[in-house]
Amino acid sequence: MKNLFSINDFAPQKNKELPFDKEASFDIERAFDKDAGRKRIKDRGIHWVEKYGERSDDLKKRFDKIIGPGSYYRFEGKDYTTNSDYFIVIGPSITRAGQKSFFAGIKKMPPEYKRKKIYAPSGKYFPNIMAAVSYASQKWGLPYPQDVQPYSSDTLTNIKIPRRLKG
Image (cartoon, rainbow, N blue to C red; front, side, top):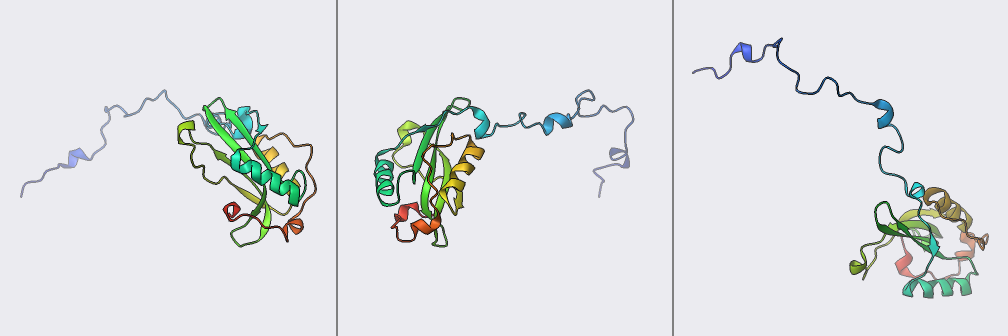
């Protein structure tokens, strides 16, 4: 049987050029710079406007009547760096474990021609609405609403929360 390779094929060659440019180097400071990659939603300069759709307006009225004013919020904003629309929801919800709590979440909206169904936002659950609003303010740059009341999960015990708001 004939050998396909010789020992010289694997020996280091002195005059062979490197497969990469010697002048190109890795800049470690640029790699760890926060502005080098995608910007956080908070840093994109999104102007958030309180806006309710057809379904969320009914929900807002219902929660304002049962719990009190400032118990449910929905904000929309346009990110001009990616030409995308986002919405933020803050309000009562049911956790996966079945406990009632407050939720703050964000979702990128689909293009307008695909907006028949918008899926649930992703976010976190909180024991009170003030914690949810401050989380949204710190995480996504939401202006802190003036009418936030100190509602806790204890105020949600006798309130019926729709199944579609379950996490």
